[in-house]
Structures are given as C-alpha cells and as structure tokens.
Length: 106
Image 1 (cartoon, rainbow, N blue to C red):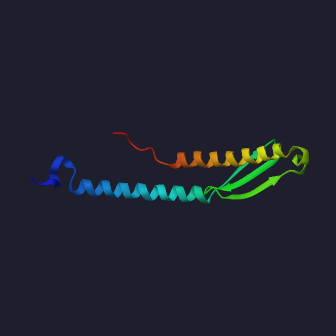
Image 2 (image 1 turned 180 degrees about the vertical axis):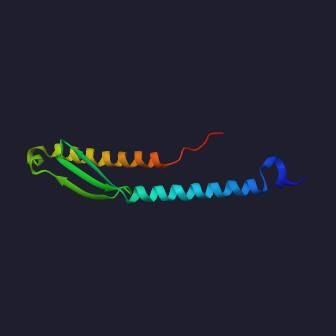
Image 3 (image 1 turned 90 degrees about the horizontal axis):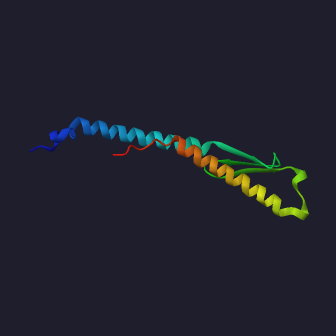
C-alpha cells in the first residue's frame, strides 16, 4: 500500500497544505512586525497624562500636563501614569489578537 494515495493526504495535496501553512506563518510574522513597529497612544485624566508605546511594548514618551503635578498628591499622578501605560498595553494586545488568524477547530 502506498501512503501517497492514502485518503488523499499525500503527494500534491500535502505539498499544497505545506505551502499554505508556510504562507500563513509568513503572514503572521509580517502582521506581528507591523504591530511591533506601530505607535500606540493613551491619554488619561482628561488629557492630563499621555503615554506613547511601540507595539513591542517599549515606552516612547510620557507627557504630563503641569497642572496635574501636585507634590501633595503624587499618588494621583502615579495612578494616572499606571492607567495610561496599562491602557497602551491593552491596545497592543487587542491589535495583536485582531491580526492573528483564527485557527480552525477540528
């Protein structure tokens, strides 16, 4: 018995599946690269704190409006920064999930 003709899973069909899998891997790698090179921005506190990050989750900048800097309430500023950074990370994760193909279930 030859496996090349077993149930239609050999020969040209297997080659076609391999090419499709390779193309899917290339498309995924390209999509991930595009996300990593993108810039994500989060603004919190009515624009008082703005954070920019790359899709590779590298912090690019933090912009803090002067009026939010209160030496007697540094905890509020810390919370705003944490909130902005976390929001950027969530944006990146959502973008990655949106560009990843849905894997078929068998």
